[in-house]
Length: 309
Image 1 (cartoon, rainbow, N blue to C red):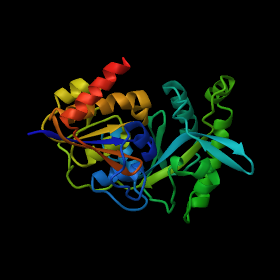
Image 2 (cartoon, one colour):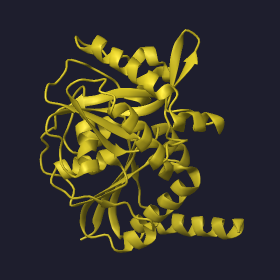
Image 3 (tube, rainbow, N blue to C red):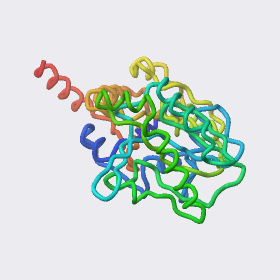
């Protein structure tokens, strides 16, 4: 029996994947890439507890109570407001991230919480009391406008005050001064988002999961499917892909034009050769289908490539 494959690109706009693949979306459901990933595992609704899910990936177990992400970000003045710059393109080193994390977590600014370091870009706070605070992911702000994403709810003013205090602690931290000296954006703020309790998921609809995404990894664990690391060699991985329905979760850098072309060529060849029965791609909340090409189309493509060489 042939294998079926679903590929989810994290942090990749649908228009970008359409441009690098030449494919047209067959469906564009409401929601973003994170909501689309959750929907693959049967989890839908507003205010998804994304922090509890990525926590499960980072620590191998679900959080014991309410938890939220408090991720390091750069806050830059922009007119009358602040503009948020994510540090994905200029990430913190492990050493710098831990020094900054230790500085804010030891200060006791937020009472009654436990801090957890998941990764240089993923910090968490846990609380036995779930606060009434509603937030939004840092990548959802229009133009990075911080004012558009301030916490809301009855407990929001307290949390905003704590965030302001933490920002002052980060302002003159040694790693940030060193980053500014190298013309890199400092991690001078923390962004609260994704709070909630651990969701209960139905059994995973996938036989196997490979991923380098924290969200896909956490969803798989919560659905009873132990994820494996994303493959480095796509061709060797496809040759050994077992029968059944597999999910491959890839981070945004996999959609860079040259790398995406390599992935798509290998997937198309596996589909054309019958090693894969069906391939569905997800990006930015949109869904794409790879279609098996006819023998004539494959011959024409091969001739065009030889002519180019």
